[in-house]
Image (cartoon, rainbow, N blue to C red; front, side):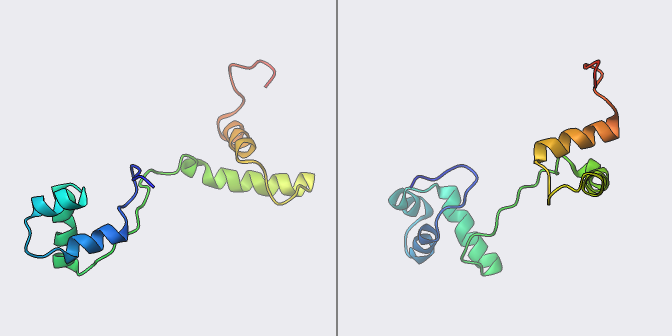
Length: 112
C-alpha cells in the first residue's frame, strides 16, 4: 500500500526511525526511504512531548452548511410534522430546501 497525501506514515516506520541509533539523519532517511525532514520531526516530537505515535489528523475546513444550521433544523422539524416523513431527507434535498428557505426562490427559474 502506497502512501497517500494527507495520511500519516505507518507506526512501523516511526518505530524504525526512533530505534535507529548512531546514524545521521540523512543516513536514516536514505536507509528507510523517508525524507530527512520526517526523521527530524519524529525525533523532535519524542524529545518534546514523549509521543511515539502520530496524532489524529483533523479537517480544518468550516462546514459549508454551518451558517444555515438553525434554518436546516427548523425546516427538517416542519417537514417531518407536516408530511409525516421518515427519519430524514437526502442531503442534497435538504440543502436545496434550506437554500430556498433562507434565500428565497432561485431567480434563474421563473417557476420556482
